[in-house]
Image (cartoon, rainbow, N blue to C red):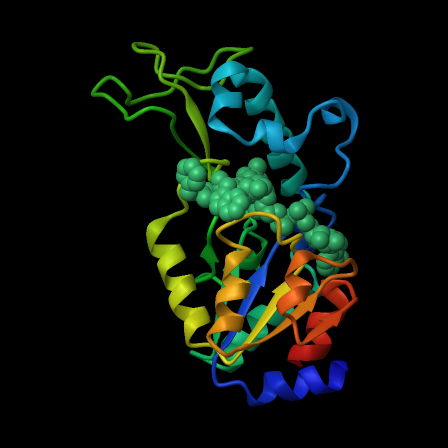
Length: 240
Ligand code: BJW
């Protein structure tokens, strides 16, 4: 089955790859819906990744992100990230890489034009529209960085539930899947929209969809093949 998908990759005029947290699992980054460890075991990540959670418990949510940023400082792109970057370099214009991941590992591997649908954990932004006073940041123990005049908080520049995705990145991703002949859906549970919907759009527009995931997902319904393998093993073999 892998050989057949390899041939599809070879023959594809335009390939879209959509990645999720499983893409980075072999780099040592926990997937989003994995059991959390230690301090965070009692919180559901889905309950932390909202604006309402941040407004209610800013320090708790800020610390969750600080903890994840620290963990990311010690990880590196894996063989799957590197295979995608090498493919993009060797086949200019044939690959559109769309990622839900905020960890920056695709970009660090060399896919600097990856469409990051859920933002970047490395960056911050103001929670509320900044006023003239929101110039510097006041750092006080026990609080997220904030404006010392009006109290506006800094927050991670990621997309939380109920927030719109970056308009340009989503439009480019939708355009790419409409014109793709092959889409690889790698390491995502397919539970979060609109990202998951891209696989259905690709299928409706005539692209072959291949899922790379050790576990079943709802997106298997539109897949011609499901490769039940880890991304860092499967992608180097498919893209070489
Ligand atoms: C491996 C592996 C290995 C393990 N190799 N694989 C339509 C229908 C229903 C609901 C909605 C809808 N449209 C919108 C919604 C609402 C909502 C949503 O989807 N809710 C569902 C949960 C029900 N969507 C939104 O709110 C989005 N915004 C939006 O739609 O705006 C319009 C709007 C505005 C106002 C009101 C309503 C709508 C925003 C979604 C933002 C998601 N943000 C997060 C957090 C980012 C910041 C952070 O990291 O903290 O993004 S949530 C989280 O889920 C994160 C991820 O990017 C995202 C997807 O998770 P992912 O990547 O799939 O990870 P996992 O853990 O779920 O799965 C890992 C997979 O890897 C598993 O399958 C493993 O088997 C596999 N795996 N090892 C390969 N080695």
